[in-house]
Amino acid sequence: MKNCQTAVVRDPEPPRLLDTTLRDGEQMAGVALTGDEKVAIAQLLDAIGVPEIEVGIPAMGGDEALAISTLVKSHLNAELLGWNRAVISDLAASFNCGLQRVHISLPVSEVQIAAKFGGDRQRLWQQLHESLNFARDRSTFISVGAEDASRADPDLLLAVAQTAQSLGAQRFRFCDTVGILDPFEMMKQVQRLVHHLQIPVEVHTHDDLGMATANALAGLRAGASVVDVTVNGIGERAGNAALEEVVMAMRRLQGWDFGIDSRQLLLLSRQVHQWMAGGTLPPWKAIVGDNAFAHEAGIHADAILKNPQTYEPFPPQWLGAEHQVRIGKHSGRRAIAACLAAQRIPDPGWGDRQELLDAVRVRAIELKRGLAVEEVLALAASSAPQTFPS
Image 1 (cartoon, rainbow, N blue to C red):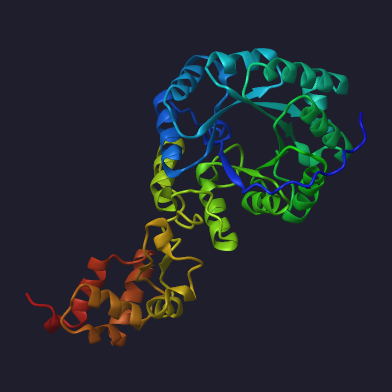
Image 2 (cartoon, rainbow, N blue to C red):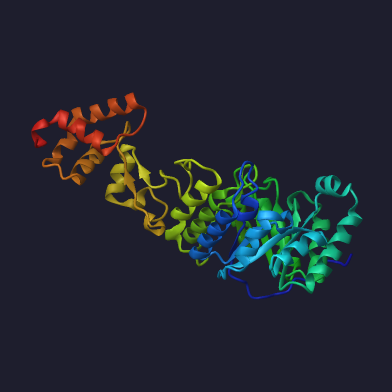
């Protein structure tokens, strides 16, 4: 193979998102989207400004291919990408669906090469050449992905990337396929690729150790131009980097919003979760969980009522939401007084009464949950019936 190329100085590209909810997200165990649902999710992603969508695996055929063909004809603003193995029949299926942009995935770690190619590295090189030669004259864009790149021999990984580049690939995807990296190692490995390649580097992270979003941000810090995400972080095993987390983290930490209308993230999150997972999101889910801007603890609630910046990382209005002060076991007098005042109770001073605070705590413990406004009003009425007209 050729020696490492000298790094080329080029103007940095602003980072962009690639959403793979319809490919890697749908590979979550137990998920099977209908064609109509795939189209609807793509339309939602397009509406909030996602610039690139990995729409699925055309080689699956049947309803999958039909849904992808429908998306191609939907005139979305987002660029559509089909995922393929480094197999000519897979690529032919993508082109038959009308796709002009394709992704080609190859295993690059020893464990993956052993499992998929019987340990034959020559087959890796053969399929890389054959697939790129086939796709080059039939597509407008080709990306090549290194499956299990984080466990690959660094020299082999770089050789694959440089060969893909020389054969016409326009982007190279670094995949932390089993989510084993920390952000420090992620930066190190991605920086090496960025340094030696002339084409953009893309990062694809998984959450097996709970670091998908952190690793995605580290990859961007290392010079990657594209980051892969899924709505709610849905995906195989523990999932992927969450679209809403990456978007809001980059906006808060780097002042970059990817061109995404963040006010639509809550709607997108809930709709996709309904179609792909059912039930409700965990309330503690970052960014889009019901508790993301909810406060109950007395000290926190008191501070939030004075200045929301005390316990919120960014304004909930960025998401089209508002902070909530909830009443429960840990509430203080100020929160209860604010609750009563919001209901225009004639004498909000009753919120300062110790007997009402004690009653709220006892009732919350009995119910093992927070209290609804109506339940707080009922306790207040019991404590001070003269303030509540009959």
